Image (cartoon, rainbow, N blue to C red; front, side, top):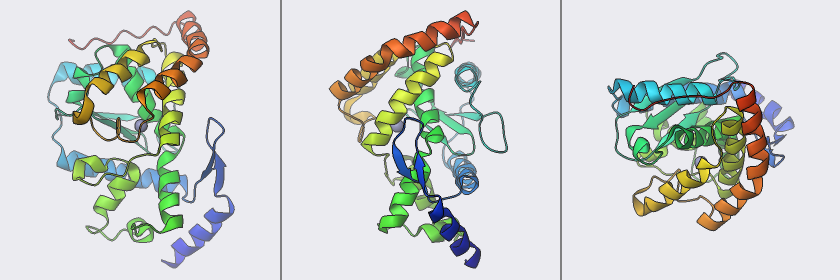
Length: 265
Ligand SMILES: [Zn+2]
């Protein structure tokens, strides 16, 4: 407890950060702690949601995720991201600090091509790179709205489990919904667009992915619908960035980045 007060006091001194797209953020928590929380939360999801045994689906998702994250270090301690396919029919996906990516099999019905799946994975990875979980946890902590974050971080075992998942944005799995806010979602869209294009995936297909997701309507998971920008705003924002993204895409292809991931192998 004492140690944590010290850590928090130190963190407050460096709390004002800037996101990769230049937005000011309040990030109170040490990244190492966020990563440890992410690793723990990922383990909890693994215990709650069955893993997919579908070898082709696993190979496909890993192929896309590996290509998307080729130049994106997973964490301070690991270069590679852990990618897990969960057997669940909802169209969900998430990524966590500490280099963890989860994709539900239901997502493969919505993300119909490797480029669309790359859109989803790059969007999730962007949330991690932009430290959105840290920002959300910090805002919660600063405003004291319901979460005993100190309790969460100091590890009171069962009482804090759902809160921990919620802070990290995977609460939908356990019935607690605490979505990212709109500014974070827009940022993940745009940063994700750059990431997928730089990996050699066609950024124009992001438009179709979000169209497919919109067609899911009320059945769609909260991460992708509830707080997302309106359909029109999202399309306008993506289109405004598309010519820059196309340059990244063309450069990636010239550098030999032409991923070929198949859902049937
Ligand atoms: Zn998101």
